[in-house]
Image (cartoon, rainbow, N blue to C red; front, side):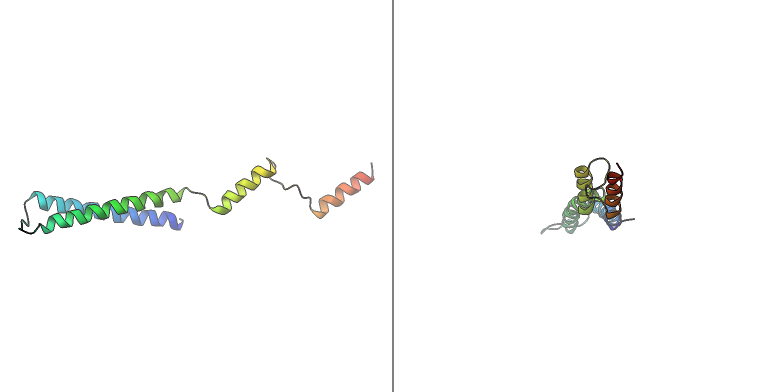
Length: 108
């Protein structure tokens, strides 16, 4: 498991926990708990949790998109294979290949 996948799982767990806490805060508001003149602490908690959920969802989407992304090295490898063609070999011959071709040309 890659570190990106582990990060996605951890974010998913945090997101689920925040959603559960948010649901509890909404239920507390709906039950009429904490009515106060200068604001409701339950309302403040609900707003705080809603912002936390939005932040976690954004971070989760970004992390999840990185799981399937290719690295710079993989991109270079793909580019090189396109440049070299379908064979995947470079145009430069090794020393042994060059000697073999020289011997073959000399015998013709």
